[in-house]
Image (tube, rainbow, N blue to C red; front, side, top):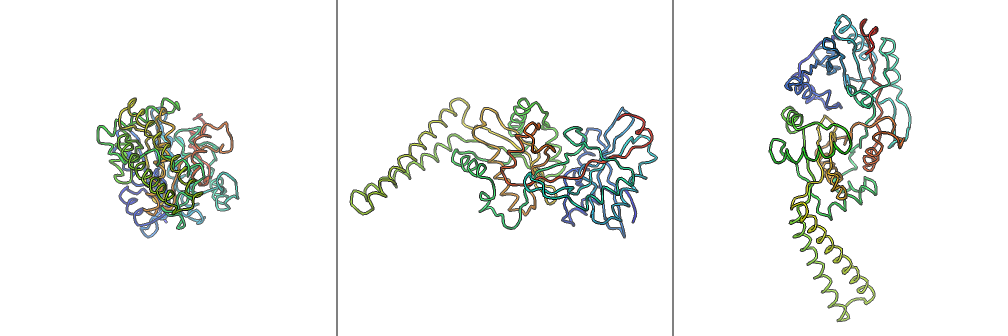
Length: 418
């Protein structure tokens, strides 16, 4: 086995030929994006090869510190078969040696891509014995667990993510049966209220403006910075069709037209039933109850038209509700970012987008629908992202609890408080 640097092209070929799991920061495209972006972010892919075959790899990001120094970090990596203790030991030992004489690198941080614990929803099931072995190897090599992640340090990945496994039993036809009652009811309601979803072109000026307006409205509400369109355009240029940007919206005129046709059909069915009742061709009790249902449903649809007309008079014909970005990453379709217009919250645009993209994930054979990071305090109502996690849980997934972020420091890094 040899420890060596490899190119983005070599990693891209390997990832195309091997259907293993990895997250976007460990993709070949991420490495290309950082090199093409004017953000001075440097990355390096370090791999173990045997007989010219890649056995392990990690993309390391160089975060600048105090102008002249770096904190080198692998987010959700390196990627390897963590049950192979010989390979694990070799990789981390060689990584340690690789940076030991580089005085500009104060520390190296790794995040082994292996679950430390298993959960059913947010309920702990058991620990992973393989992770315990990896932990011992890292400790023996003087890598120290940091007990930190994204929620305390923005250069680190979140230790916990929430994902939904899409096995062969989940289909587009039965998807609604595989989410919570709340999600099922809400998704059905978005359909009845005319919420639609479309994928936008981030390079189209009007589409980009809508996308950014929704993100900025969200940013102001949650007091958290959301990436701007420059980033999303760079991402699209780098990973092409693997990046998806979507908007949920209501076309008021279209909704009124569709609903008017629905009412006309209901009224015709009602009138036909009335005629049969008058002629004594149907059970009187059942028909009377059914006629009452028709009248109630027709009245509801008329009210919906009135509300949409009022919405249109105040906001125009097209009502943009929410936006989201998704990344295809190996076996995972990642729900990367999202935003929603506060004043249109009741129309539940994010549910419509997620239902749309879950069907996409199923039809394109993704193994995981990945809701991405969540804090470790997933049972605490005081957690900063508690409400967001409850939203994710409505889609019936599970916490994935990865190993800690580990750090090894050089001589200067040990002395300096970093």
